[in-house]
Image (cartoon, rainbow, N blue to C red; front, side, top):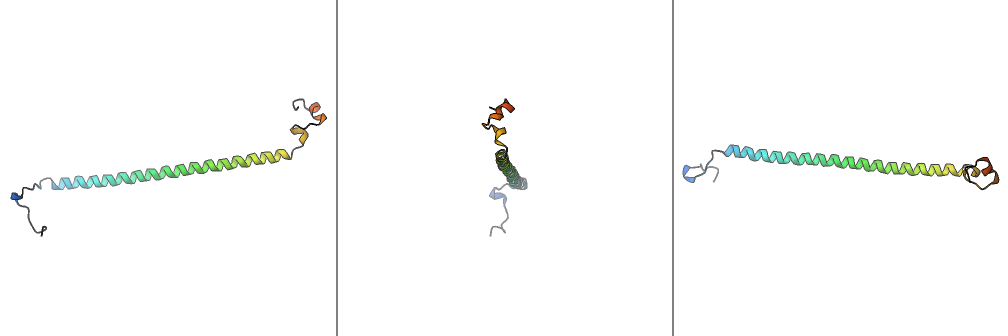
Length: 98
C-alpha cells in the first residue's frame, strides 16, 4: 500500500516546498473560480440591462404608435374646412390655407 510507505532519501524525492506548492495550486484554483464567478455576475448584469433597454424601446414604440393613432383620430373629428377643405369661405377666412 502506498499510504503506509515512508519516503526514503534513496528515492530522491524532495519534499521541501510541498506545502508551498500545494498552497499555490489551491490559490490558483480559488482565483480561477473567483474569476469565473465575477465574469458570470458581470454577464448577468449586462444581460439584465440589455433586456431592460429592449423593453423600454418596445414600450416607447408602442406609446408612439398610440399617440400617432390618437392624433389621427382627433384630426378626423375636426371640421374639414379648418383642415384644408375646398369650401369657398375657407381661403377668405384664413389666407394661409389653400
